[in-house]
Length: 355
Image (cartoon, rainbow, N blue to C red; front, side, top):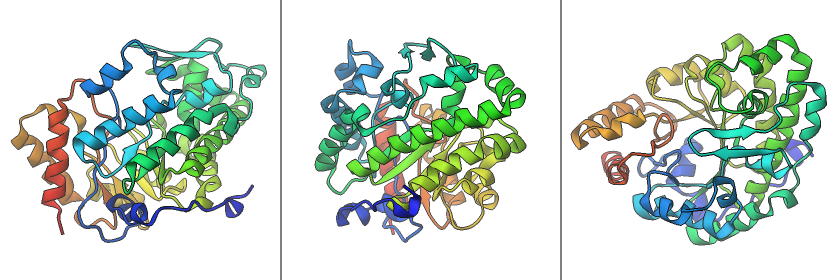
């Protein structure tokens, strides 16, 4: 199915007119919308309570638990959008890749992909493989009402990095060795991951997600020339494949200041910016026709309230002339963050930007 043939999602009118979706579409908003990456998770005591004794991947496969965890920050913080609770390796686990998320380490792959024969681990993803996602999103959209739900997936490069390295890495030596030394194998790997990622996003959109975010968490490890040649085509394939649904598409990576124009070029409607680049500079790099998301440094939340508000004003001032702005942190909420600091931050942004 081409992007032009993809069915358009039918969005409830109340959700369609939400501040979050309006900002993504670069339309006037009543206030700057706010949501946080990793808002559904480790910083909330209620999250730790419901997750107690349940492994991460198992928790992602229980629709009622996913629903509760996704709703927790909406109830507590009054954020303008919910983010579906899952993990970027869920679609890989769903197709049979032998991996687990080890506490304190992250995703660990039993048999890393190093040869062409290893690609056999990556079959197509079907909706039946992740039926729990469809069920959970159905439950969520009924509970959320006018609050949009953001679906998400890991980008092909970040998934490939985990699969080739066998787990988290700071140097990406094996992934880059394949990218430089066997570019055909690398391209085939990313192309296959693009198809899996696309299928995972389509399941979420068709179940009722109002927007989707592609996390290329580790793309900042790449030079622009390598990103353009070896990564951008796969990410662009994902964005193009879901374009026909008409939902906003967000693209985010960490340490990607030098890649912002390329990440926008990949096809997103909204480009996420980490805290290293001011938004008024980021818009120059990305160019016109895109909304921006970001970009308060997550560590600012450990400072006194007055300091948090001062740094927040800096972000909002830098975003003053943007066509569309979604307020977020420049990365995920850190586990030891005081939840009350997040609640105060949401209220401050809403009050400070009320129009």
